[in-house]
Image (tube, rainbow, N blue to C red; front, side, top):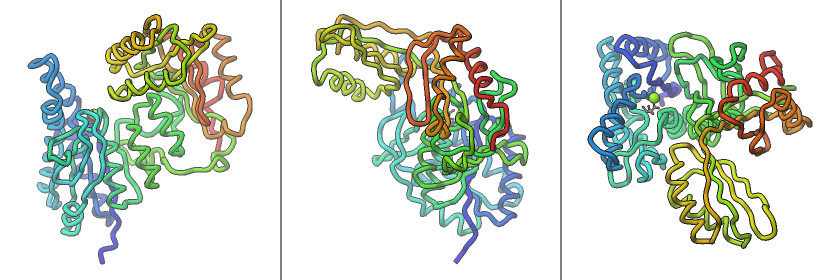
Length: 411
Ligand code: ASP
Ligand code: MG
């Protein structure tokens, strides 16, 4: 039996943006193969080519047909995969490219945001056994009816981790244009620190909260299947950041691991909603039927038997969210719907906050001292988020990074 281990690599758009960079990736993969690894590599589309495809779609149609939209935007990955395989073969490294369908990636049939259901790895496996580097297109799959789907912007990370899970690989290297996961965005806070290690749960929160380094679903897959993710630079041998299961004890003393801000949220409020059992269920049922992803939810009492319900959504979902909410308001006899999109969701994340009191107090006090007003607060076990005015976002991140001394090495 062939006991060499399968390692999955993913290279993002910046890493394959030019022919020279594709050759650089090919060389790195050849080195991995020479170390004895069985190499599967997932690629994104070159540079910003996915955006260009989307622009094209919008030039021929105001509302591009969803099936054809996916058929189009998935093609960027076909190009980079074929080019990378060519570059490998040219250097006498046996390789082949496989698109989503050829790689056996089956998804649900919700275009643009399909979910990977299962992967039939037999083709990949046999090509690996034949000694080839297998290059797989990220971001795409096929429905049970063989229609091409895409799995959401930035989805190649998820393709890679899902493949690692299906192939029972221990590690998935996410090679990208940053050299790891930082305590916050280093462009906002120059003394942000690179984390050597972070837990899945923390990474999941950071990824969902707007830290763009990993696609959230990829972290979920990693956690579910216990695949170690290594976030690292495509251009250096720097070890990067390891994402794995770590206990609170191993976490050491740090109460907060990272600060993040999401500028792509909008909030919708439904005013004077009659307080009856089932109204919230009706509203969020309608929203979910329309595939609107709701984030923070706040129901507050206005006065007797009248509530307001406020929630946040991604800006892309604002129009549909508003429409659904307006219909709901009519249906239940609420007063009306208001919305706001110049907000920012600011969050601190850390497994350590479970056992350390006073974290919320430190956060709110620091923001208060800088005159930053909190519009909403929401918490989970390892996260505290608040909605603030968007104009204060950058300042707020710096304030919290300082307040929790995240620039300092802890463990
Ligand atoms: N090319 C796709 C995008 O730009 C998928 C990816 O890069 O992960 O969203
Ligand atoms: Mg991309």
